[in-house]
Length: 545
Image 1 (spheres, one colour):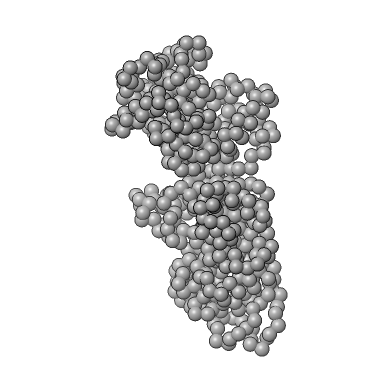
Image 2 (image 1 turned 180 degrees about the vertical axis):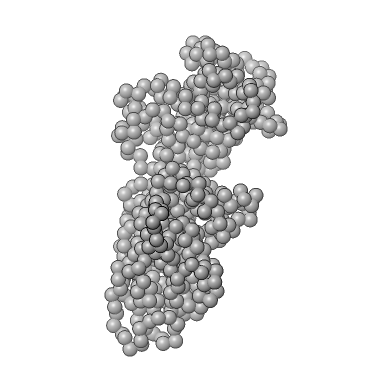
């Protein structure tokens, strides 16, 4: 699903009109699709013999889309009423068509004290909000605000309010900024035309829009303005197409080998969460490279993994560990670095040694791990690094290394939350959060790597200008360890040969959906733990197959 600004959508419609798709045809197509979507909501009213729908109809194109939809639904046997807000019935061809089909019309300007509005709301199973669309300017004028206020007041008092469908966006939402008027009617479903408007994925609009669906309006997808949009909203069809096939004759080597360098005594669980996530997303083999003292605590909890015991200093990965890890590069098809590392200088040297391809100088024979003897002083070149995913403390350590972006084999996948992005860029968290998509896109281009900027509506940006947004914002993911799960999912997909951008897109979507599934299973977002998200991953993937 394309993600567009209001100006971009206007340009797309303008070019489509110039290329033989008149605005009238776009409206007819949009209304027909809207009617189809509304008619395909049987779990709300499939037992009803006489289904009633009320449309709030504004003066613009959204009102036109809604009127067309109402006409189609009347033809299908629905009882439909159009409540005209700032729109006159006389001389309106769409109103005339609706009346001819058997619909009923009430003009708000003639409905004293909203008596007809309240009566219609009481009997309607569906309410269509088609008052305003993308051209809204806030604040709302008093006469329209009073109508929306009246609707909200009535809905709040009803035991079984109608199902609310917003056309393109809930009336009162700024479709660029995400700002919303206080009078905006919260929707259960927003059917947005052709593409998702960027404001719908920003707060507070995102909380008012409900579920999102896209209605086709008949665009020729080869037109220049459409092709030029490189911003996507990720859905299950996108992710399903990314996931590797799993042929019946496959063996574990078919699905790659993920190598995960993670953990320290203070953050033991990070390694476990990442390792299991890599397996759950389909990797054939996962090798865990952890500080040696962690092995006893972790091995029994992930018996499917193989293990590399890394040299350590007081339970954190030491600089000397780079040489040990390099011996496994040849077998690995992807490498994750960073979960649970801590911020010790010796671990920073380990990261630097990985990037430079040099083994560390040995300083002490007391370290545990498989290293060369103390007498071997010369630096050795290691093998080529596998495709890389960097996460968590690994990112903060990267930020301390000069020219780190040039030293990473491209394209690596970087998975920062805003705090880690701040360390990498020098921007404040506030600056990052004020333009998440722009920030991710800018630095993906500058660094030459894929950036996964975590948070509400996670943004994935590629060096070539593509961006994708995960349409999920939930406190279920606001818990320690969930980022380790995400990193494990991405490296598991990279290990299977999925390219960097696609692996990040699919991993982030599966992660977000698993968070929602876990919250639903537990009945609350407050109790979701990272391992609950892990447990939900198989259910999410099974729904894609």
